[in-house]
Length: 207
Picture 1 (tube, helix red, strand yellow):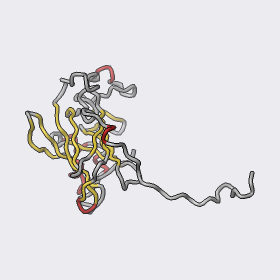
Picture 2: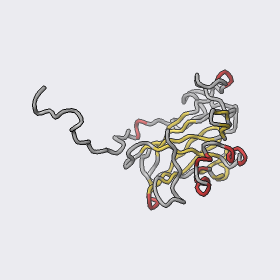
Picture 3: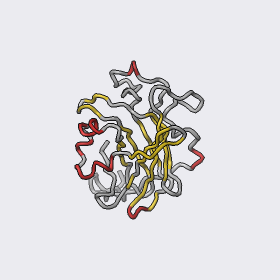
């Protein structure tokens, strides 16, 4: 071994880097943000209520995050996953993908087309209907994980073991807001604030 190589444990730590580089817009295709179908050519699922989940990703001061990447995953309308670890997989909706990817525009806006999810049993307790969201973007050292619950299920939300880990005064930041209808489809609004005052910042979870 050359004498110029220092012994193990003596090397200085390297600097941290933010997430990146990012994919160009041409990497994404129409329908990537549609969880209701298994591919762009497949018919959408009919086993549940189709909804739109919209919001904005902002950083401190309300500055929009351009070209942030979001990934969403969730149970189907009956609370099942088409995954080997789900004991109810045999009853899962095979026409529902349950996963999608979106990106933000110049205003930080994003949209997912999906189904209103069902609740399910978990080793930690009964989970309320929710959509899990991962956010990756410039300036972030690692991805952040948020969870969007729904106002349709107040009793289930109150009992959810994960939501109960969030301080009571901040739980409203985890519940999407009803935002009317579009073409007969209900719209829910879930804004993600990456950093700011405690009452404004979105609660994030560890994976």
